[in-house]
Length: 302
Image (cartoon, rainbow, N blue to C red):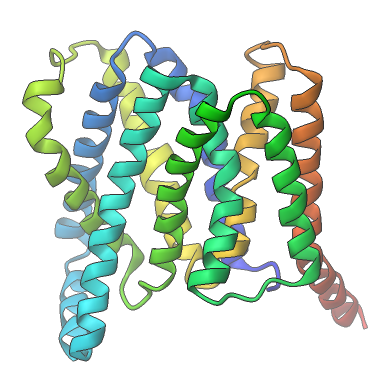
């Protein structure tokens, strides 16, 4: 797979998510569930407004496309969209639960395990081809994860569950490619809101009144939710799930560098070794991409 617009879309999505902590850290005084509720509800209202006001023709075209599909494909599209919405809200809820009731390490470690699980799931469920160099990259990732998880087996179990939910989301949406991705994302957010809404009266806190909460939440909704999720779904149109999975390592790498250079957190030797292996694995996995890009440049120069 050459480096193209789909490759760049996936890379940009994970780079954006890598800086998520910059917007989330100032909200540490607010309950995590409240952030989740408002993030999903505001994102849903925002997406519905855009589609109903500015993209009516896309909605009409989607209805027409759906009617023209066979019954089997219609059923598949409905199931994949529903599954996507369920997996999104499950992933976000599990992530917050891990942060509040297990450990921050288990939540962060989930997105280090996730690329490996996504690559393996794509190989098993979608029969995606993985070459020798890519298997070597997966092996390096496994070694790095073993180093990071040493002595934290309980955290590893929670991390696997969280990672599995997002990995299954990526793999399922790879097959859901017949419709406009922005519209699919809107429907999935509506599904997520419908799941969360019954829990809000019992588990939601007092409605925040501070300007800081809503200004940062708007940034979270637009910059760190809608844009990267859309780019991710768009990338799955032209990339296989295993490539998207490995590119996901961009996210924890950025978190790692922010922790060192911006938040001034202490870092162990094991973490340095593990993240170095992750960086090497990304380069190894995308060896074919870099080779194709170089060959294309040579052809153009000739």
